[in-house]
Length: 231
Length: 156
Image (cartoon, rainbow over all chains, first blue to last red):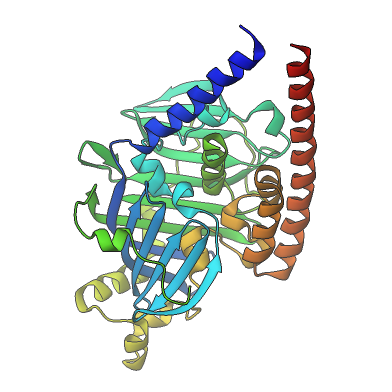
């Protein structure tokens, strides 16, 4: 097979796979959410509550925030619009958050392994500890100067915890995924604990998801919001 | 492109800090944190969450009432870090992803995103420099790959 033929085949395979993925079964996620976070040694923390609307195919995310103050954060591609009482109050450039979010991973069914294999991580030691299967994953050789290994725990083939290390193999953060429910056949964690280990102490964030709806058929105008006037 | 975005998604979940509290030692199970203890530390915030859920009250309304629970939450209006994942201004990273990778994967656009999105001046300088290095390394690699392709195709 000549090199040009190989490249044509590679092109077809890559873009074909992306096209199939774009039309995958799960594409919309709606949930009430709360985020609680607190830093070690500080009296005050933070609470945010609201609802999230995410459409994987449209690459749009809406954070309909109720507390601390009612406002909407509309994220589309690399722009985020902050709305208060239907008035645009600010906008800023952000990364294409939709594809980086936990909601994308849930809908894409990548949460059970964070998509580690697809980005070139290779599996290392696997150990059984009670009901948990704990596996270690090593970063791609060419990125070992920048990324560290990852440990993951699974129970009944669902991710229950993950630990991330820096390139010097020092623990950076841990995640725990709890209270799974099955929505339309899709396992969704109801509670996510995040612990960040820093020199100043630990920083803890707890995210809860309730009233989850997958592939909601209505509220199209919310999922597919129009760019605000002036934006 | 899909691989790149997947890598970003992974790293976003991975890191907000350069420093660590315990080494990677291959322990059979490091997932032994007492989550109920974490819940206990958040008791007041949980009570506030329940109050807000029941009354639909906002922070400003509760402040007017001088409700004791609302004194336990920060009045900082910038909730970007909470929604997008960072945990400390001086260690701010764009979505928790190292600046090097922004530059490496997104080239000049990644460098621009880093400089425009990070507010803290210390973090902006640190991550900005890393993104430029990443951009340079990425550009060299792509140029090398391009040359290899051109040479390979011309050979055949």
